Length: 490
Figure 1: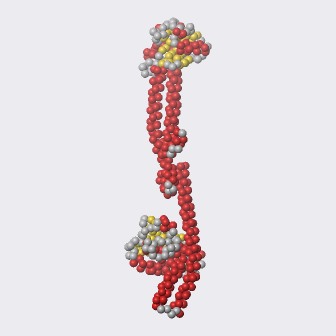
Figure 2: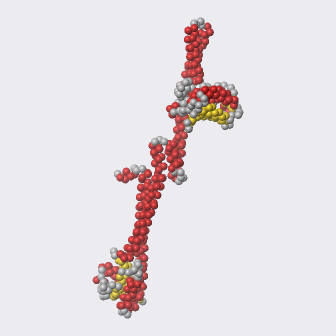
């Protein structure tokens, strides 16, 4: 249960904990390996040094023992203990000499191990050691070694020209020689291990959390369904190009493609909806036009031949004006490609400017106009003029009092750009969803029938162009791009 809860932890905790665990385990294993190696090296050095000492003393003892000069033999084995410096780690604890009958001939501590003592009267370790030497039945080995919990035992035969006089045994204390140095190495290794952990653990926590942080933030943004914020996380928090960076970049590309696909789907849905609305509006307009034309013809006939009094004539005139207003509204719904009259020229934009300028002056607006069109382009002049007039009228209506309306016309050889911008109030998401539908109540004053953008959209579609709305820094901008292709010349 606890293990499952650990695996359910967030990566921001799980990865640093795993990293710390691996660092600690690795440090302990390396430290234990080094400590074991240090202990083994100390032991081997001690045995090698003691074997050399035992072999040298055994060579020196042969002649004194041959001459039965025990005092001289005692001086030889006691010399390493007396002459050795107090700090010498190879200083033996005891040295004793046995004859062939396993009796003590001399020792460095006669009070503890007196001359003539049988090995069997000493500690069991001596007996075991001597028995092991005797069982070998060979003196080809210059030295023998053994250890127990407290001491190391090293033995060398006292032999010359194949004649053996006895055995020399050197005893080293672990407590006095091996363990002090081993503990110093152990403390030094532990100190270095602690220093390594003090350095590696914070680095592990920082780097693990630094690496995991983009993953955590991306997960949070995905839960919030905020794709833009998720893309910013990738760019800001992990700018590297390793495998994780490539994974983040692939994720970013997926987000961009997803956003593009969603935008395309919205555009397709909007186009299909507008097309359906357009077909419906055109059908309704045609159905209304038939009876409407008959009623207007009847009124014209009544006005021409009818003998009406003043009250009746006034009523008929009122009906006629209402029917004409209905006809104009229905006519706005019938945006169809007309027979091409002439190409669009620079003078057309000057005409539009002259027509719009009085409307801007009434509202005390500043109309900024910029156009680089210096040639006739293969577009129907009346339709382009209508598009620009509709956009400018909407911009003037939406602009703040004494504000600014910008109009930009740019000739890009293969396309013509018309851009109209104002500083008025922008559109809400709900308004943008129905922006180009007929009878859309976007005007704050409630004037008009909401067909300006509808007509503009229909004309732009007929000309094979596109219209975009952007809102940024308190500015509302409509941009129309019209292609200058051969089929537009037809």
